[in-house]
Every structure is written in structure tokens, then in C-alpha cells.
Image 1 (cartoon, rainbow, N blue to C red):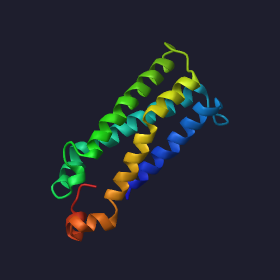
Image 2: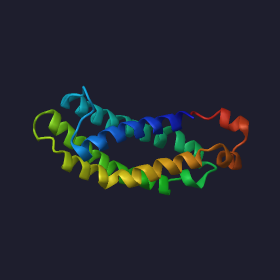
Image 3: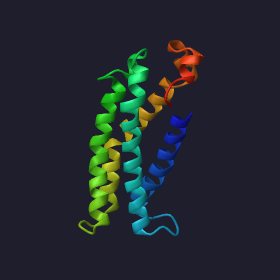
Image 4: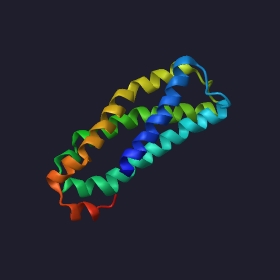
Length: 148
């Protein structure tokens, strides 16, 4: 459930960032500095989310679930996502430090570069972690003991 809530927050933030990049209009009352901060927070939170998954959650799940084993599609997707995420973070940091000018078409292009894989990945995680699928591999007591 917490996993799904994180995904909802990621989607909400992405949607604000992407809409702004698409039409070059920030939400009412949001400064450029706040917009850049929102983008950097998104990058940091998604990076932290995936790091926690890879270090603490996926190894537990991988004991019984092939989808979470090393070199699985989900872990490969993490690498693909982070290539785009790292580029986005660097761009936003440069803009926040006034080393680059924030250009919305450039921002949108970066987001387009990894958006599809990001949302495919998050949907597949939710499916894998759903009750019906988890019940195929784990007992209720085993699931209660998991570090989630």
C-alpha cells in the first residue's frame, strides 16, 4: 500500500512538471525557484525510492518472485529510468544555480526521454505487489513480516 501511495505522489508531481514543460505555464502562485525545487525533489525522492527497493525490498521478494531477481526487467528498468532521471536532475540543478536558462521544450524533451519507461515500470511494480500476485508466492504471515 505504501508503495502505491509513493507512486501516486510521483504521478502527481510528474503531471505538474510535465504540464508546465508542455505549455510553459507554471501553476498559479508557483515561482520558478519553487518549480525547480519541485523537480529536484521529484528526482531525489524517486532515486531514494528505487535505492530502498533495490537494497531492502527487492532482495526479500527475489527469494520467491522471479520479477525481483537481479537483471530482472524491473531492475533493468531502474537503470533506464535513472539515466534519464540523472540527466533531468543535472539540468534542474544547473538551472537552479543560474548556470543554464530553464527552457521548457528542453525540459519536456528530457521527460519524454524516460517517461514511458517510468510509468510502465511503476504500473508493473504495482501489479507484481498486488494481493493476488503476492498470494501466489507468500503466505499472509510471510507478507506481514516483510520490511514494507
